Image (tube, rainbow, N blue to C red; front, side, top):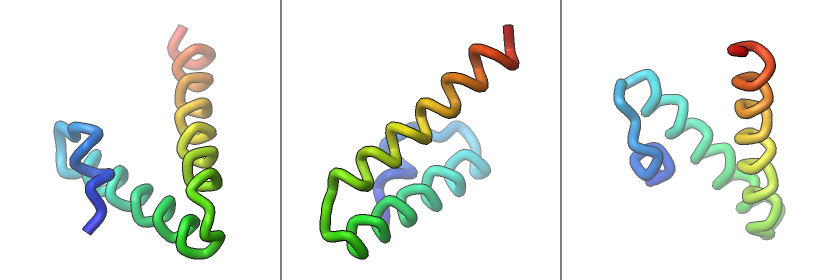
Length: 59
């Protein structure tokens, strides 16, 4: 089980599913590349995209 979905404190089942899926993707990236840095960079890029959307869409 991936704890990524629980660590981010989802407030609905929809949020949990999204966080859980991202945790699986980041975990798969680590298993494929054997480098945790890749998963961390992808997590950061995901966060950056959401920050930019928040800044420019929800002015």
